[in-house]
Length: 332
Image 1 (cartoon, rainbow, N blue to C red):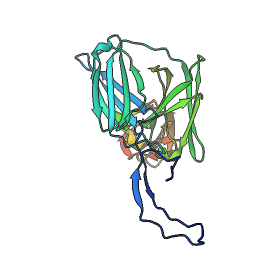
Image 2: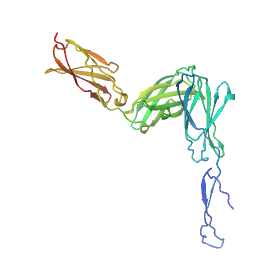
Image 3: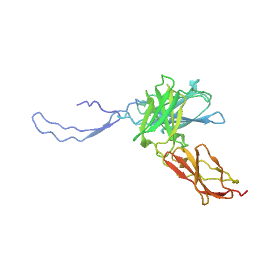
Image 4: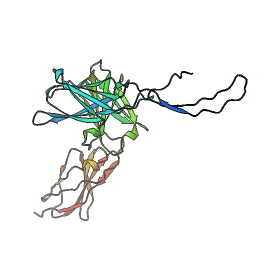
């Protein structure tokens, strides 16, 4: 007999045997193989847990979206059968509730109290260590200890850096999602330990799409106030330009108004608007305003004259003009 050691848990092995006698120089044929699996062991690592807390409902309850990443340990400890979710009010552990899910997400409807939530992965041999998060009460305020967050891109990476005002924080969560994403479960996150910067492959972000990025400091199982910024990893000029509204012209002036381009057409941060206007058979002129300005009064116009006007919205990658409009100034 022979004891095989160093085998992985929960792994199927095939074993075959051949022999040779002390007086022979030739090995026998291999025996028919036998297949068996090693026993499972309880998972040794915690799940990677995060949450999104929605605003309180009118009845004083709120939806807490819990999500976690499946355990993909290698070597494996066993087949994950599901996840045990336990939660209770922080000041009343007797009211502990337990759910079981085979999914990697769940929505809990909680009242305004602070709650402690734990999740463990389960297989036939037992449960993993608990991943624990605290959900603050609705009236709880946490101080802002992150002073600033900066994002930039290299050829292959997106980099997020931040500065903190208090020492002693050693763990953070970086959360990111598309600005137009409405499903809380559509968010991505990653824990960062002993560092105030985070890097990820640019392939995790889409070009020309605005992302919300938040950095959350962690104190044990407590999540402090985040610092949030928006970023594009790559910009291109807007897909469309603003449409000018000329209103009612005067003799020598007119107020041009326009609306912001829809977020899905901006393709970058709008930096300014340029109003181009030209009298019939005359020279084209222009005025540029900041991105937060959505109307502009053109003055010193010629009376009783037809003008063509259009607006260009610009970002870092270039500008796009909107549909031209015409108006005629009054004679008197």
